[in-house]
Image (cartoon, rainbow, N blue to C red):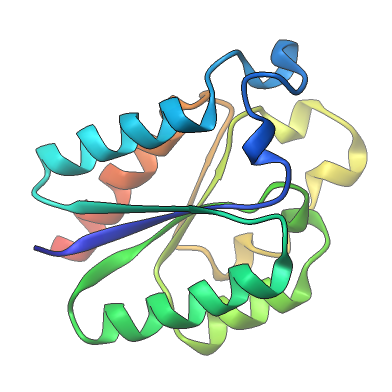
Length: 150
């Protein structure tokens, strides 16, 4: 069975308790279950990971690149959190391994602080899902699935 990797960056482990007025009350465990169910409907295995450490995320991106090249993974749904707006290293890692990535943001970052309007990941992302709450993960999984089939 092919897989989809769902990566979550810093502070997403606090989902459900951190700024629920912005991010909602759904926990990361709830998002994981949602992704597993949706991926399963498409015949995919969902691999779900979260780290507050940039280097760990980079290592997982490198691994995912190898899995995609081997035909065992369709790509990555990536909510990089604040690293979206700061990390050239994540940009370079995605680009280096030619990884199909859909960038996900729970909130509409373009309606928030100015510093959140710029993404270092968008230029190397296959697509971007912004502002649909945790349902954005579902949209991203479907987007990757369709892209992998074409």
